[in-house]
Length: 96
Image 1: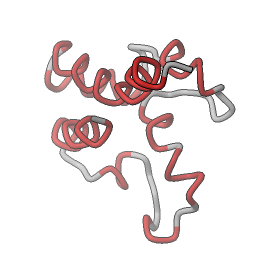
Image 2: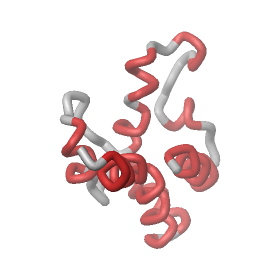
Image 3: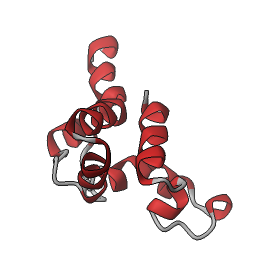
Image 4: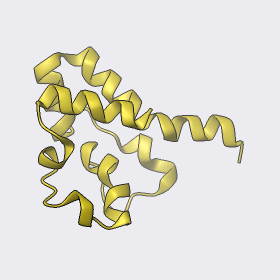
């Protein structure tokens, strides 16, 4: 689901994710930086707790605002749902 959120962002902004997030060399990124791509798209703080990721998502995220401006609010909401789906589903299926 997360990957399905990246593709519409790239489509709406008509740029690859590396250009959107100003990543100089994707091949040399550290694993921690790769894990933070979702957070950067959603404007989450770098030190956010695992449990609170979905609570921190804001419709005012720079990238979500631009996606909404280009393709509309419904499209923006779908992107947000895809980017947050792993966190929502993890609670349902892991039953901690």
